Length: 169
Image (cartoon, rainbow, N blue to C red):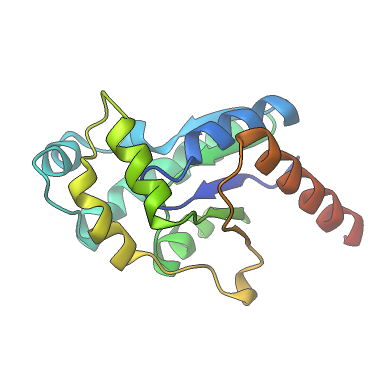
């Protein structure tokens, strides 16, 4: 696995669960993008305020740096919202990346966010994230999964698609 995989989507879509599982199955490192938010971003989200583009640039650069440093030592899978194409393009400035977008139904997201504890992202920011989300377009070569399935089922779909993509190279 030479090309890093970024599992993306809004809060509560399952990025971290799928990312950890993929990293384990591929024998790569896992990067939790949320760990790279600067304190001011965490404070803003904790207060129920949505992030703006200017809040995200340094965070995206930090995630990209972490991916690059781990990429040198083997495969890497990261969980990062990467909601807009411009954010994905910013990550791609450091090298090629393959995006997997998780896009379950709103009701699934709401349920997951209500059940989650100990995270700074409150359910009240879901609408803001959904407004910001730009699903990857065909020319981005991303895999978009709209189903609500167990992480193991999603991982199998990703690995099958990844195998097909590698076979075409």
